[in-house]
Each structure stands twice: as C-alpha cells, then as structure tokens.
Amino acid sequence: MIFDRILGMFSSDMGIDLGTASTLVFVKGRGIVLNEPSVVAIQKGTNRVLAVGEEAKNMLGRTPGSIVAIRPLKDGVIADFEITESMLRYFIRKVHNRKALIRPRIVVAIPSGITEVEKRAVKDSAEHAGAREVYLIEEPMAAAIGVGLPVQEAAGNMIVDIGGGTSEVAIISLAGIVFSRSVRVGGDELDEAIIQYLKRTYNLLIGPRMAEMIKINIGSTYPLEEELTMEVKGRDLVAGLPKTMTVNSEEIREAMAEPISTVIEAVRISLERCPPELSADLVDRGMVLAGGGAMLRGLDKLLSEETGLPVNIADEPIESVVLGTGKVLQELRFLKRIEVDEKSTL
Ligand SMILES: Nc1ncnc2c1ncn2[C@@H]1O[C@H](COP(=O)(O)OP(=O)(O)OP(=O)(O)O)[C@@H](O)[C@H]1O
Ligand SMILES: [Mg+2]
Image 1 (cartoon, rainbow, N blue to C red):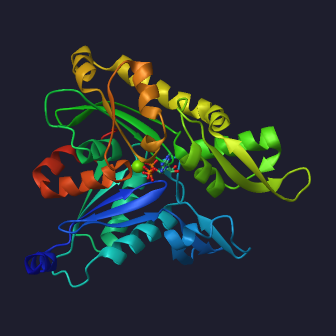
Image 2: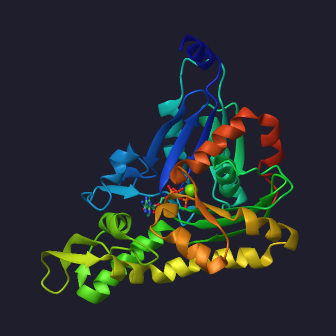
Image 3: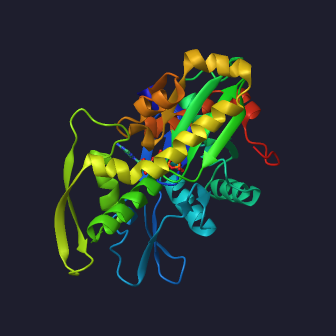
C-alpha cells in the first residue's frame, strides 16, 4: 500500500480508450479507474459544458430545450472537436492525481478512421490537460494487446472489435497491423435497426436507450436454445399514447440481421485479403472478439460457422482496449514501435 502510494506520487501515467460509446481510463499501478459514457451535456447554442459522462447520458433524450446532450464521437470519428476536447480534459482531470510530481505520460487509443487534424486535436487536449507526453495507438492494436494476443510474434493474430460506432477487424503480426478493415457499423447501428423494426412492424416508437436495453437483454445473432421475450415501452404512433408490448428474441434477431451481416462481411474480406502464411496461422489460432458487441448472444457461434475458424470472446470485452493501453504503458520502447506515426496512413 505504502509502496503504491509512493510510486503514485512520482507518476500517474495513464491509458485512455476514447470510444464512441464509452471512455475508459487506466492508471498505472491502479488499474481501470474510470468507465463512463462518452456523452457531454451542454447549454444549447453555446459550448458551455453542464455535465459529462454518466450524468450527461441520463439526460440523453430527456433534456429541456435549453440543454443538449451530445455524443461527440460518432461512427468512430470525432463529430465534434471542441466537445471531445472538453470531455477528454474532464476525464483526465477527474483521475489525475494533482499531487503527482511528474506530469503523466498518456497513451490514447483512437479509432483508426480519424484524420490527422483529429489526431492532433486529441494530442493537444491531452497535453492541455497536463500530459507530459502523449502517444496515440490504434484501437485494434490496443485491443489485441489487451486480450493478451502475442502481437510481437511473427505469426498471424486476428482481433475483431465491435464497438458502439464501428467494428474493426485487424490481422496483426510482428507488432504491426498487416491488414485492417473498419466498418461504420457497431452497437449503435444495431439499436437503430431495432428502433426501425418496431416502428415499421408495430408503429411503436422507442428511444435509443430502450433499444439498447432490448439488444442487451434479448438480442442474439444465432437461434437460442430458449428464445427470450421482453416487455417494451414506447409510444404508439397511431394513437399517440404510451404503449407497452412484448417482443421476442426471434424478431429482434431478424431486426439486427442486416447490420450483423455487414460485420460478418468485414471479417470475411479480411480473411480473403490476408497473406497465405498468416491465414495458415489463423486456422489454428482463430480470432478474438472484443468490444461491447462481442457479448451479443451467439455472435461467436455465427462467426465460427461463417468462417470455419475458432472464435474466442475476450474475458472483459469492453475493457480490452484500455487494458491494452495499460500494458503498453509498462513498456515504452514497444510503444514507440507501434505508435501511430502522425504522418502514417494506418
Ligand atoms: N451485453 C451486451 N450485448 C450486446 N451489446 C452490448 C452489450 N453490452 C454492451 N453492448 C454494446 O456495446 C457497445 C459499446 O461497446 P464499446 O464500449 O466497446 O464501444 P466503444 O469502444 O465506446 O466504441 P468504438 O470502439 O466504436 O469507438 C454499445 O453499443 C453497447 O450497447
Ligand atoms: Mg472501442
């Protein structure tokens, strides 16, 4: 304990997973210290931040006219620069030990689709928030390291990270991404598909939070031994009144079929484009699923059936990326090798 505290005085290096759905922070020697939705509530017409994280998420869809709850990262890219910066700063300050004598080094995992300007913005905001050095690492690389894949070996490793805004597939060997594919389909798109389905089929209008609950409670991608049901509350579009009805897992599976097939397609394409030597490795090693979407019932089974490869689900899929940034902090030399070069197109 005392040893920990003394160490903490000298350094509080941190790793951050800046995700579309949630942001997680890992502090060296302490583990994961923050896991909050990437949501910011601001005063309408201004950039005045009223709440960040959990508190702001609860406001989504429920705000009075003068307040808007924003998700500054959307579809795996930064939709709102300034708000992203405010959010990042808020989270860093929240966990940063102000008494630390040395300013922290920060590793930030970024969606692979972001632009050079956005990378600069992420670096700047981490620096403004007190970072001494900022390193950026691509999400799939961080996820692969986080789940414990031997990324430095000269052998193929495959990671499929299904997040809120994007799904990223990457094949990694010798600490480099050999092939990667990112599709703008993730958990959000599944929620949206459920909303559209209920609207179309039952004239029932539900909000995104209810859609997410349906997906988590009864969502599946493969027939279940025992199909599930759930009571859903929304608004009847014809009568205009609140309505409660029961939906089952079979219809929700059908509702999500299209976005799920996009993810499967991305995995197939990655396998098709994979150099043959690495393909051979993957036959035995298979792929690891990470990100919140990895917890979708039956996705491992479906992917295994579609590809013929073994599919494993990460132990803590939502934490994989941030755990990867944490591991990378321990070994700076390695970090320097895999860090996203600001001019590289990776
Ligand atoms: N048990 C579950 N079953 C299915 N989906 C889930 C489950 N738990 C969480 N999710 C979904 O996972 C998504 C969030 O995953 P994650 O935290 O990995 O995303 P992110 O890293 O913030 O996003 P991105 O990587 O796209 O930037 C959300 O869409 C959420 O609804
Ligand atoms: Mg993610």
